[in-house]
Image (cartoon, rainbow, N blue to C red; front, top):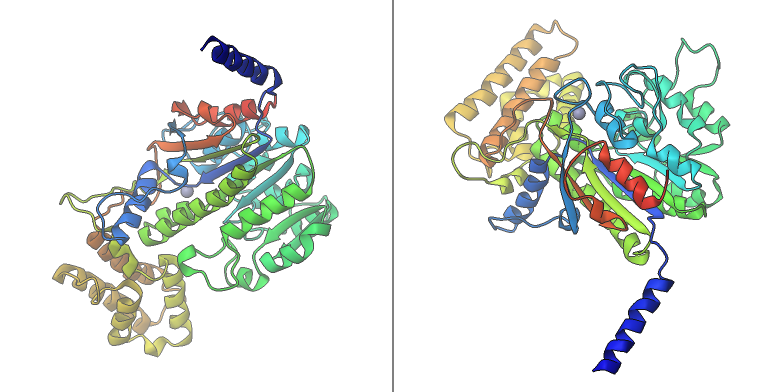
Amino acid sequence: MKKTFTLLLALVCCAAVSAQPRRAKYIFYFIGDGMGVNQVNGAETYLAAREGRIGTSPLLFSSFPYMGFVTTQSATDGVTDSAAAGTALASGVKTKNYAIGMLQDLETPVKTIAEVARDHGAAVGITTSVSVDHATPAVFYAHVPSRHMYYEIGKQLGPSGFDFFAGSDFLQPTSEKDSTTTLDLYQQAEAAGYRIVHGYDQFRSEYKKAKKMILFQSEARNREYNQTIPYVIDQRPGDLTLQQITQASIDFLMKQKKDGFFLMVEGGMIDKACHANDAAAYVHELIAMDSCVRIAYDFYQKHPDETLIVISADHETGGLSLGRGSYQLHLENLDAQKTSLLNYQRYLKRLIHERRDSLTWEFVKADVRHNFGIWDTLEPTERQAERIRCAYDRLAAALMAGEKSDFGSEVDELVYACARTVDEHTLIGWQSFGHSNGYVGVYAVGVGAEQFTGRMENTEIPLRMMRAAGWK
Ligand SMILES: [Zn+2]
């Protein structure tokens, strides 16, 4: 007995002497834009409902061993925007709404965890499902007083020297006010050493020889709509996906052979869907982000002693509620909807432009049945049917009058009459088209993950990640 104990003690001491202090050499930072705790719970409840169960089917990230609650208000407002929340998540300081990487004086830049990673010799990737100059990616590399300064944000991408960027496109590639250069943002990025590729196939064929890279979606997709990559619910074969962006990031950053990497992946379309109160679109975005986390988790399993994965959100969007008072929830009814609301709006506008005569009530009713399952799996009440018919009548009257070039408000009314009907059948609700101050979660696994428990301010997250990485 004594002999066994001595042997055990020797083994323990030996392990203590030989163990290196573990540090997170590879850091994954997933930000679900607009992903409040109800968004996460709603996606898990939807997955169970699809299987005919009441309950949840846990996502990978929400099953991670460490989790906590995060408060999101900005320095100046009870409800934050993505720029102030992103600055907190990137730099550990609260600032004024709309500020990107600056203190609330809107003059003093603040250093971001991505810049710290770069300065410590790590490879850095900043990626998103929206444009690369949007607030959440911007807060990691740019310092400007307003998130709407898209050109100025894009101009700071090259000088960051980060290894890899991905997203849909630049929103504002040129500026007449910039007298310092005649180059547009694409040319400026190329002059700074970035190879710009479009789509995953071009990435795969070129990434090995590129020193630094920007991955955008295909030029054809960007000509249609360049603000984001398509919603998951609208994806067509060949579209760039967030999963491909995640895999591309890992492959590119590992190829750089630097001292580990820092990778930020934003699920930017969760926020877009929730701003539109589009529940069917948001659940698919959130589930897609979880599958991106799975790609990171596979990496973690190969490098368990050197990897940290953290998932959080900048704020909640829409004031999503899971219940409308009747003590029931039928999220399986979200499957009746086959398109995002945005896609359906754009489709109706195209029809108005190209085949206005086709927009009879019979045509629109059949189309609504096909795209929203209304009059099919979802039998509308009299009031719901009347709401859709009234919205159609107003659109038809406006088309008949023919005075407008854009029938945006009439199209919106029709689309929202359909969306509200789906909401009423799923029994979810929305408080607004904006953000709320609801808690968001933080979820972590890997080296240093134990720091991400309990309740914390959003400013704590990058500081705790830096501690795990051993960065000052
Ligand atoms: Zn938002």
